[in-house]
Amino acid sequence: MALLNALPAFLLILARVSSFIAVMPIFSYRTIPANVKIGLAAVLSILIDLTLFESQSVPLDDTFVLLIVKEVLVGLTMGFVAGILTYAVQFAGAVIDLQMGFAIANIISPENGSATPLTGQLLYLFQMLFFLGVDAHHMLLNGMMDSFRVIPLNSLNVSFGSGNLAEFLTRLTGQMLLIGVQLSLPIVGCLFLVDVAIGLIARTVPQVNVFVVGLPLKIIVGFILMLIVFPAFIVLFRFIFDSMTDAFSTIMQLLGSS
Image 1: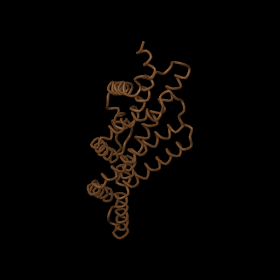
Image 2: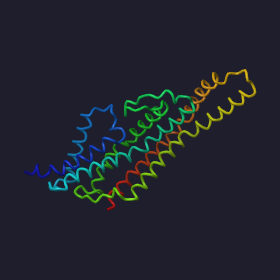
Image 3: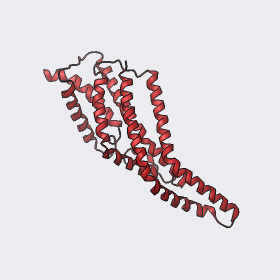
Image 4: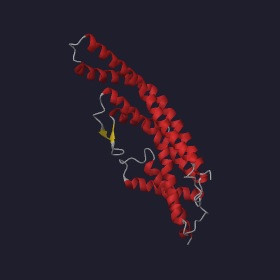
């Protein structure tokens, strides 16, 4: 009987945790088997239930379905906010590839099954290694557990329709684009100077076929610049991590403000 009374609360916890894992970085990758994701969500839900809601019961009434929908939306929103800033490196890679001439050679990413720029995928892998090295995945799981303290489990008062939430998500998207531009600007700027130099050569020495010389030259210069600039990317990866932590805390406060 006690198990049946605890089942509704467990289902609500499982709805938030599973929807969060479905879209959050690292754990949402298609290369991770679905059985592992389901098992992880179930184990985390059991631990959260025993830790925070051991004596709390949720009635099975007309609002239970709405509570399930609310938990799914909360989990998806938190996972989206946790992952959006990590996509800045893929945006930066797309801009770099456009300048280097790699834009026509996109690959299918095994993580999400979509076309991804070559340089963007390389930067994204470096970023994920950095995040795993600083235990960002543990931070996300800990933040998801803390969300149950900020956003009540048995309450429908979640401010999805708040203008503050829409404004925050808009600013977060703009911040993602800004980080992407900052990542790509050193390489793109130097490659622009290479374009200017090639243009001057084409005007002064018309015998040189700039279409044959220009593309290999930009690729070589691009690789050399990436080797030089890569150490500085670690600083921006740290900034992305700190921004992701702040955004995660802010979205929980906005969702639980009502």
